[in-house]
Amino acid sequence: MASDATTPTKIKKLSPGEIQILWADGHETRHLAPLLRGLCPCASCQDEMTGQRVILPIHIPDSLEFKKIELVGQYAVHFEFSDSHGTGIYSYEYLRELCRCPQCAR
Amino acid sequence: MAIWNREKDGPVTEEKVLDILKRVQDPDLRKDIVSLGFIRNLKVDGGNVAFDLNLTTPACPVKDQMRDEAVALVKGLAGVQNVDVKMTAEVRQTPQMDRTALKGVKNIIAVGSGKGGVGKSTVAVNIATSLAAEGTAVGLLDGDIYGPTMPIMLGIDQPPKSVNNKMIPQESAGIRFMSMGLLVKSDQPLIWRGPMAHRALQQCLFDVEWGELDYLVVDLPPGTGDIHLTLAQQVPLTGAVIVSTPQDVGLRISMKTLRMFQQTRVPILGIVENMSYYICPHCESRDYIFGEGGAKRAAAELDIPFLGEVPLDLAIRQQSDAGSPIVISKPDSASAKTLREISRKVAAQVSIRSFATLPVLEVE
Image (cartoon, rainbow over all chains, first blue to last red; front, side):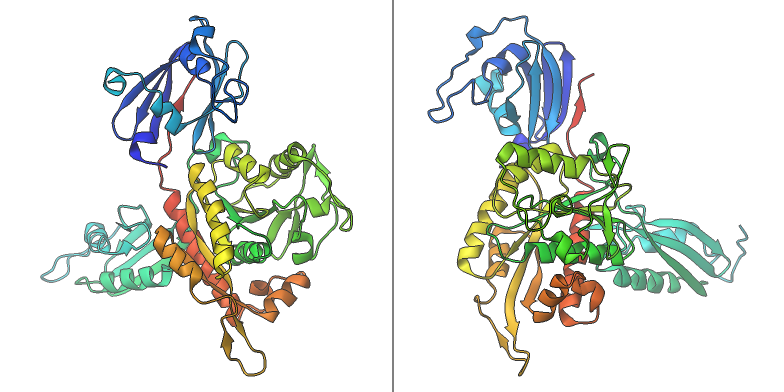
């Protein structure tokens, strides 16, 4: 459910392979394209019923980049990557959950 | 501008007028009308004060109250003799609507329900026509691809004309509308799987020359399917109105629709209770056929606005079937008044949402 921690105020592409998300609670998240691609939530990257992952970050080359970034309604972001994969819809909750900053990783 | 000295209190100045007007609060936006920028064209000429009170919708439910309050306060200033207030309105655009293919549309309001047959389309068409009657530009999209009802309710079933590959919406009762029922003969069923319905909705939304609209009302089919998801993903919806009967079973299913909107972060503008009671045409006694106050309680529990109770009224049904919504054909009837009040509350909720902040996307 929507809270400040899962409400972005700004989503910025820092480089071809990195985005920055600023959240309403003041937190900052940086995401690399290969990690997001490797944890794509779409039905072909993750089994719909069991949730078991078909694609993992280790399958993705480090050089992967973002090709297109769009907002989906008011709840998610859609990425198309340089390998042409673009079926995942990343909810704001999921993007926050994936934050790998030292504070969140603890 | 001529400002002359009056006796002991000094002249009336724009500053003094603005200062006193800061005491008028917009009860919905919870800010004073000066900070909100509602005061325009302020002119002080000796003891004569004139200004425009520019609201965020002409359908504001408290506009008279705010005007009266403003006039009384300014009149109370020493040296003021006449106060001339012109009421104007400018509907604000929902943030990020301008980055979609519907740049000319300021707000999109979805009307949904859990189960069918609760009078969703009747409520939607009456909200749309009420808002138009207040002087706003309104469009209505019949999102029910499989069971379109708008051609019947608005009395037009001719296919829309097409210019430059865009369909021109039909016009009736002061609104522009689009429906699958205009494209398919009324007795012909559409036997389509989800992706076709998704595509059809996209066309009815994006391939229509809506022009400039203050409000686009979308009458959703019941449930939580393809159409809902398409809409929640492709446009930044200003918000959703949930229609329910007072009955427990109807309400519980409505909660599913409500949760779907919450999960996709579509703001809930409020709940309308339809078929709240039946007024006997012979003795005028009220019967609460489906129970009393169910939706109001649910709204209070969920902390969302309760927009009103619409009675089970023969006239509403007759006017809908005759192709002329009751708020237009019988504007003085009790049911029309109720529906008009509901539409004003919807407009007020839309105004609140238009001040919301959404994420800034910097990807180029």
